[in-house]
Structure formats: C-alpha cells, structure tokens
Image (tube, rainbow, N blue to C red):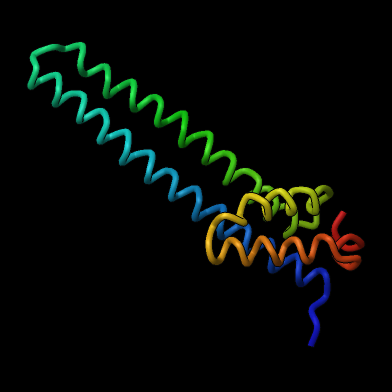
Length: 133
C-alpha cells in the first residue's frame, strides 16, 4: 500500500510538531536550570568573598545564557513548529518551511535525522512538489 502525498504531509506535520514540542521543553528546562545555577553560583561567590559585585558575574552569565539558549531555541522551534502547522493545515509555504525544518532536524540523531531525510525525500519528489506549494 502506498501513501498519498496528503498522508505523507500529515506524517511529516505530526513529526515536526512533536519535535517542536520536544525542542521547546528541552530548551526551557536547560534555560531554567543553567540560569538558576549561574545566579546561585554568583551569589555564593559574593557571600564567600564579601564582595557584592561578584553576584553580578552570575547575573551576567544568566543573561548570556538566556540570549544563547533563546537564539538556539528560536532556530530550532520556530521552523519546525511553522512547518508542522502549515503541513497539517495545507497552507501555502509548507514546502519551504518543511525543507527548513528538515535541515534543522538533521543533526538531531537518530530520529531527527530520519525525519529530516524523509522530509527531503518527500519535498523534492514530483508528488511532494505538486501536493505542497
């Protein structure tokens, strides 16, 4: 039994949506834990040395962490989430966002790589091009 292009798009949409959710919660957890540890470390160093300026190091580290994980999270979550939504709703631009999401997921071994390759296979075939604009 062969799947129709609409069924392939639905499978990819569900897969991209699952990865968007996993990436979002992973980055939020990393963000909370890392910022908490850095701020606590800065406060601890300030208490041990008696220098209140040392607490700023932990706060500055927390700010840099928020920016770093925020950018990484946006790069990972936004394309996969948009691709999922556009594929499931059959919206224009689903193919482009699907290709971008496939590229983003390639380094996520092993399931992200498999989903990315499956996405490339579908989006670059004639059936995928004709189904998804």
